[in-house]
Amino acid sequence: MKKLVRLSKSLLVTYYAYMLEYRAELLLWALSGSLPFILMGVWSEAARQADFGLSSIEFARYFLAVYLVRQITVVWVIWDFEREIINGKLSFRLLQPLDPVWHHIASHVGERFARLPFIAGLITLFFALYPSAFWLPSLPTVGLFAIAGIGAFILQFAVQYTFAMFAFWTEKASSIQEVWFLVHLFLSGAIAPLELFPPSMRAILMWTPFPYIINFPASILTGLKVDLGHDFGMMSLWIGIFAIVNRWLWRKGLRQYSGMGA
Image (cartoon, rainbow, N blue to C red; front, side, top):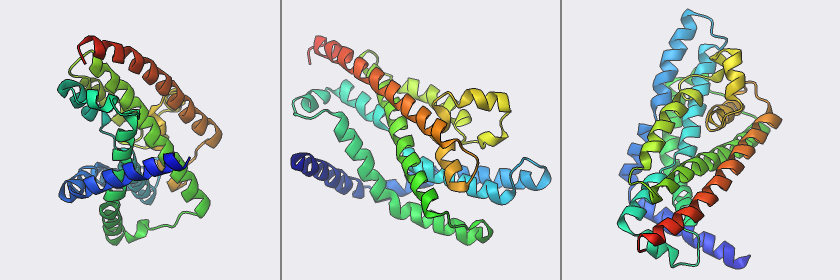
């Protein structure tokens, strides 16, 4: 256990220091995720003109929560893994007594800590511009949001890392992620709260992985209706499904990779 803790600490410290070298790029990444603020303005204005079931303040809070969730769940592992396959760098990773996935996880977690000051600054600016939207969630709500946010990141990572396995057979595995992202953008709650979707469509979506990446944790933070038992259960189920498929593709892919002379 001590060895595992020491190894985890070393990986996190290393990748955190690495990410600090790119502060300007981190700021740009944080700003590039500001689409929810644009949508917030659109939906808040629409709520003043018609009844959507949510007030303009509720829309503002929801899209602030969406921004936070997107900052937590941003994943780029498929591009890193694809590059490692194409450049042959995966061979060096395989020589280490550590599954390469832990390097990618440490890289993502380290980046989250490096990104925190920029996120805090944007949230402060948001409340300075929209003081009427300020609220303080209860501690249990913050705790549930943290758990759901971590679960959403794990699910997002599992999905993208599973797609990354196709890099063993194609040089453009990232194209799969681009198609997935377009579907995810509309069905995850990033464009509009799922509360606005027709009940029948929403009922179907709740059996897919999409709502649990953004809508579920955002709804917890803003106090929208959620079914904690069902939603956490479905999130865990989809994480398990993608983890199983990922490990199966990993074993198949390694045989393909060694067959290419690695």
